[in-house]
Length: 419
Ligand SMILES: Cc1cc2nc3c(=O)[nH]c(=O)nc-3n(C[C@H](O)[C@H](O)[C@H](O)COP(=O)(O)OP(=O)(O)OC[C@H]3O[C@@H](n4cnc5c(N)ncnc54)[C@H](O)[C@@H]3O)c2cc1C
Image 1: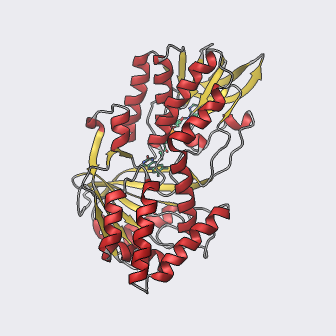
Image 2: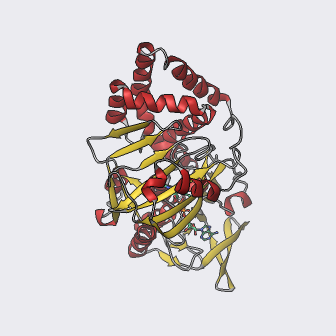
Image 3: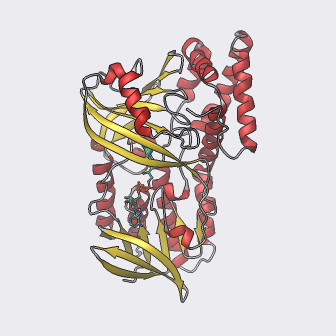
């Protein structure tokens, strides 16, 4: 098999890259290791309205629409924010990924399922990729691989694209019979005992249905996510009431790469996109939209590279940095800062959001969950004003700023003790 481009992994990054490559007239082969695209599913499926508009996604793929959020602090304080505009939709990744792969096939890409790329090597100016398929072996020789293997890629390291990131471990129960407070508002639960190094959530997926989940940073706890999820379902003062009597219909497990960009995200003959490149918001774990954007940018670079532009692969990295690199960097710093704050400080921040109209207005006006860095200036200004008004809050504002400054020099979370 000798395609112009081999795309490895039929998640949102790979399927978008394959569709765009095929539309650009490149002979494209898309490999997916599982027998069916989109399963097993690991993701919560929250996807911003920007992604739907940018990629012409049908709203019929959405299970729920989100405008609001309720945040629960470690000390039980509840803050509620509601945006005037629609913020996001929630999708089921099985039909969603299938839709994207079908779109790639319709554009002319060949989609091969049950095909796992296991090794890559340079051979006469091309790449030779060995693929396991149904007990046999395929060999693909190609000038260019777009690697979209997800959170635990194997091929880039074989060509010297070194990994540098932290994987947080996620687990979710998809449930029927959930007593949601509102169908358009996810609930987020914070606390070192709730979900060390991340947070827990209930994501509405329709009336009476939702995904109860969390992720934990294994550097901050030795306990598995199951321990925390069971505790959340059985013992959290709010979450346990929401899911009392609800039925688990599906379990979803997966890893999210945060706190570290895999740079560079290219080498001669290979571009890395999506989770494989660490293109994820480290605050929330969201990576679908960035994977799709990077997929599209990688296809444009592929066409130029195969057309004879030797600088096209390097230019891919500058292109995605320009498109959303700032969000990846900002959320990485924010996550490191959050991980340095104590539960007392996190509670004080959520209390300020609950009680200070100025802070809440800043979040509601600027709190587009896709572009969190846009929050920085208005929320910082509101927090400083709130700290000046309410002297009990001042130490928290100072601690948050100090944590953010420290994290600029740090290389990850500075745990204040294991959970
Ligand atoms: C618990 C959890 C909740 C999440 N919630 C959200 C959310 O609400 N919103 C959001 O935006 N993001 C969320 N994410 C992150 C999101 O799932 C990823 O950022 C996104 O799927 C990245 O897309 P991708 O195409 O890079 O990788 P993936 O979606 O992981 O796709 C990679 C594909 O490659 C295939 N593959 C891997 N290796 C090979 C190989 N060697 N050969 C062939 N095929 C291979 C895999 O089977 C898979 O289909 C969540 C993640 C987790 C774990």
